[in-house]
Length: 169
Ligand code: SF4
Ligand code: SF4
Image (tube, rainbow, N blue to C red; front, side):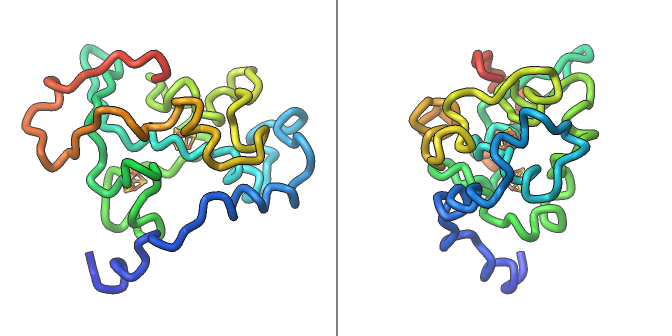
């Protein structure tokens, strides 16, 4: 990581400020717009900040297996990416969450992910920050990675040793 990139670590990012900005969005836009119709701000607001897409996955016989190992740049308390602005340059297999990622098969986003839920005809869960107006509601509901037994990928030799079967994946 370059010095510039280190300077951009998200140490001063306030998730609640981001959620406070949701009041500028069209009320309940997700109920009458398809994902393809959403603007950039609406799309970004759908992310609940759970961090679960930053867990490492492996494919075995065509099926996604989740592990409790995480990208080395994930902050496990806040569930924020420490290098958000530079993530694609620093981590080649970090995936942009776009419509193609949402519809990819086999599914690799967690079943609680707002993008996947809406695209599959479900509503947002009642703990989603767009519903609660609180950035921490995903953590309080136990739907984020915070508080879980997580292993930094830098310590992992064989991902198969870390497969988990969490209900919300
Ligand atoms: S899994 Fe979905 S909702 Fe959770 S952090 Fe990733 S993109 Fe956001
Ligand atoms: S680099 Fe990508 S996978 Fe790693 S923590 Fe950041 S967003 Fe998640």
